[in-house]
Length: 399
Image (cartoon, rainbow, N blue to C red; front, side, top):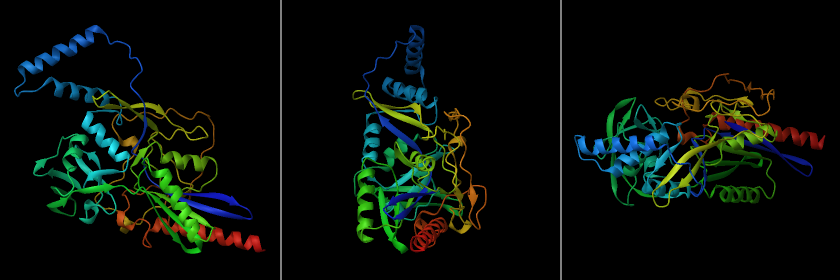
């Protein structure tokens, strides 16, 4: 999705374009000090009895620690697709990701039919350098089948000491399964990348929302203004293939759209309108618990619906990843229902099409290596839109 916003400076208008994609999760943080009402004694007794029976009678030895951890995970994950329990190691791993630095191969994953599937490799990492593509399925890690593993276990196996090796068995639609051996390295997530395009139009890509994103974005804008000798005529902000992170992404798109500070271009966003609070459990890991729904400034709920672009620009087939399908929040089992607008009757933004665009969303994600290049049709449409707007502004100003 692309957004175009207008920032007014003196006698001229700066046009900003934002290219946005789906948010996988938005997280807040909280302490664990709130009192919790005591559970029904009979329910706790049932849990204790089942625990004892499993420990006593199960075919293989199993510890109470394992059973309690898995019971907590089961309880949380049945609530909705984004709530979960993390043990201490998993909690530390998540914290490292949001801080933008961890050891691994540099790949973003989801589970598809209980098998890990690549959302996108992170630019400049072993996964990207080895040619891993969105839609690739990792069927084995160091010869261990991954079917049925939870996400945290998969991540644990992929991460490790820098310099150590991990072998992945990859299933890709257009070829037989094959092995790739990667050398782990320190993954430093560069949240914001930028460049200056023609007519002094800036381009900013936000690859993920981490703790450093606001500072990186401010630095990128400052650098772009310096390169443009103090004057940017336009700005493209690209959020495509952004997996989310801390409490942002689609929220940015909705706010700019509602306040008429941006024209959103591209295709419908993922549609996750819930907030997960991270609740530490005093050395016993943490909960990732859905605690709120968020709305755009006008009171629109995007849950299960996403942000509809003002101008639809679909992706040409030759720029799509053929073996990966676009999924949405509404496709997830147990996803929360949309509760409706806080301001009933508020108008929806109309969606028009650029030449060559179609009314329906693209079925496949964009190839990561194309993003922001001259071969990127959505980026080219945004740049053309801004350049024409800047030229109209010049004519009006000098007319």
